[in-house]
Image (cartoon, one colour):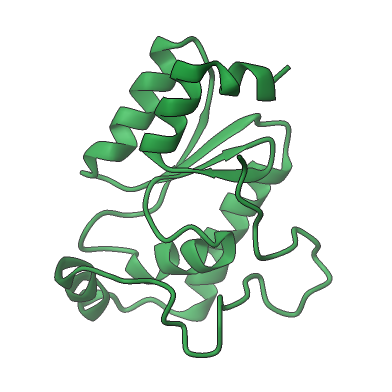
Length: 146
C-alpha cells in the first residue's frame, strides 16, 4: 500500500515543504544524526534546493525514485535489489552521516517518511528498503508499474 505524501507538488505554495506537525516531533533521530545536525551549517535555501531536486525527480517520468545518502547500507541495498529485479530507478543522494542533515530532514518531513532511504513509485512514497524488497518479492511492484 502506498503512503501518501503530506505535501503537494504544486509550485503555488510559499514554502517547498510543510512540517508534519507544529511540534515537529514525528521524527525520532539517532545521536549520530543529531551530531550531523550539529556539524551542519545549512540554510533554508539549501534545504529548499535539495527538496526541489527530489520533487523534480518524483514529478518527472521516473517511475521509481530512491532518496538516499552516502554510507547508508540500506540505500545501496535498495538500489541493488531493484537492479537485480530489472527495475530502473533514479537515485537522488543527499549527503552522508556528517553532511546535509537538514536537507534530508526537509525531505523526510515533506514526504512523511521518517527513514532513509525513501522510495517513491509513480510519485507516491511506498517506504524504504524493507518495503520495496517485500513489494518485489510479492510481485506488487511489477503490478504497480503496469
